[in-house]
Image (cartoon, rainbow over all chains, first blue to last red; front, side, top):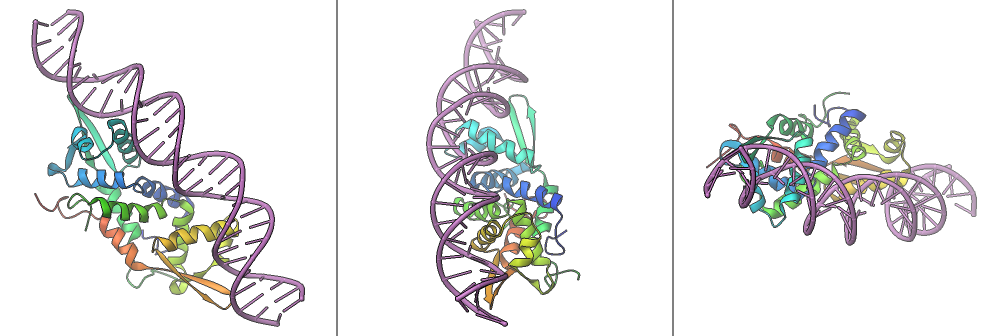
Length: 107
Length: 107
DNA sequence: TGTTCACATTGACAGGCTTCTACACAGGCG
DNA sequence: CGCCTGTGTAGAAGCCTGTCAATGTGAACA
C-alpha cells in the first residue's frame, strides 16, 4: 500500500524504515545492485568483495544487514556462499513509494 | 533505472543512499505519509507535531531532512508553514527498487 | 585419515555521525 | 507590544561504519 494513499501505521512505518535503513548506505545499495544484476541472479561473496576497496568482514557485515532486512537470501554451496535478491521485498518497497493516480486515494 | 537492471554506479549509489537515509527513520516515514495523504496534498506543521509524542524542534528537524533530500517542499503562508510531497523523487526511488521483467535486463 | 589451506562469518573496539531535548531567536497577527 | 508559530543552536546519549583478530566450515592432498 503506497504511503501516499493513507497515513501509514506506526508498526508498518517502523518496518519500512528498517528496510530503508538497510538501503541508506552506498555500499549496500551497490551490493544489492551487484547481486541483482549478476548473471543468474546470484553472486558469491568473493566477487562482491573484489568490487570494493573494503575488507572482507566489512562486506560480510553489510550483507548481514541486507539479509536481516529481508532484501537478500544466501546459501552455502561447498566452500562458497551464494547470495541472491528477494524480489518480494523490493517490490513491496517500490509499491510503498509509488504515487497513486491523482496523488491520493481516498478522503 | 532499476538497480536490478545493471550494477549501479558509485555516484548514483551515493545519491540513492542519501534519499533512502532520509526515509530510514520511522518518524520521517510517517511524516511523509501524513503529508502525502493529507487532504489537498498539503499539511501544516502544527498538525504534524500533534501526531507525534515529540517536541516541535524535533519534528522541524525531521522535516528539514526530508526537505533537503528533495522529498517534500514547503511554503510559508502567513503564520503557518505548509508542506507537500514532491512526487518526482518518490517515483524515481520507486523505479530504482522496481524489478525488471525476468529479474534482469541484459547480459 | 589427519593436516593444511582457502572461504566466509563473528566478535570486540575506535571514530564519526545521528537523534533527541532544552533554550533562544525570527516572522506574522491582534 | 504580547502572543503564537516555526526554526536554529548546543549538548548528551546512542547507533553505525570500518578494521583487526579469532572462529567455523568445507575441500584438497599426502
